[in-house]
Length: 455
Picture 1 (tube, rainbow, N blue to C red):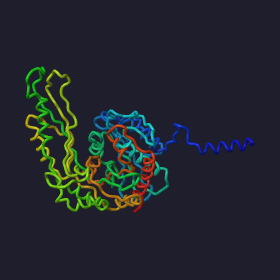
Picture 2: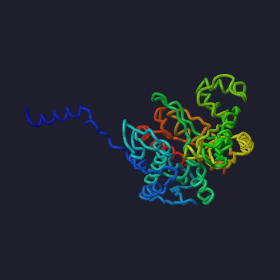
Picture 3: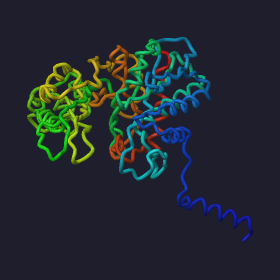
Picture 4: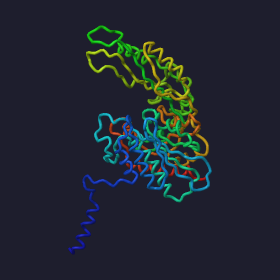
């Protein structure tokens, strides 16, 4: 056989063989950026968001986008970039917000939490879902628009904040308090908080967050006489605290129907007959002492003010009675709950010997309406893939700082991620499928282009 034919035959055979073991397709430019972002350890505390802000600033400056960094009173760094309209302005700015900090990695990882490893078609690392992937989707949308000749009839802001995981005091709250003019012209904020549903590769719905619970974070403490543990001190600081916490967590929960929960069930009930029937009978099903029939998992948090003791601190030696014992309590209030009344009930249950200090609270705010031209554009950009519904979030995000000031805010995730990877949020082995990420980046670009287009 002639040498040329042997060579062609070998090449043809090679094209049919699988890739060599361990070989991986190159990452998209967006995924490579996410990998670099995940390798920046911004664990809060202490946050160290300055390294992330510096990295983002370099990426943006390379496209000629103006960037400003703002330092909080505690030295935490926030970043705001603005891409100006290049055509006749027709409305206020669109802001894209994500947080640069992440929760501690914790135990149980099968990969290095800040290694940005690619495995099984996924990109692994703390922040892969919450929420550095969203930040890169925002970044890619801004970079694409900066390179494009498409008309932009609104300014576009990219806002990367510190401290969200600890309540946002050194991040979004600090920006509003110290630099409120940054957001004076913002017509709409897109932030984390969206909850999409996908099952077995089928896209069921887009959940756009329009309302959420409110935080009430407390630190409670008790004091007592220190001494040797061989002594009898039934009223020690630890015993006082444990007894007070026991009374608190044993209080029977009070169920109630918040308008935000009713609106959510009315919206999703159009897609889910079971939830539709629940919404129709809601006043008969939900009673103050609990549901009159079984309701789906996940729904109880929409009818209850939740309370969770998350931190306990006292002595360090088993044979020493400490002088003080402390606990931290994460409370999430329904939008209609009276904060002062709820706090009074907490103090009564704990007892007068327990001191209570509020670490974080939020005033009531109106939900963002699921209506109007910008909502319609968002729906139009997504509805070809799945129905869009407004949702009520049992968690909290920085969107509340905008809603408190009358600025419309939507929680929107452009990614379809099924249940198994989602378990990594605030847990070990956080990861995002690369195909879902790349499609989400492109989807975010289309959404932002639509929001900036002329009416």
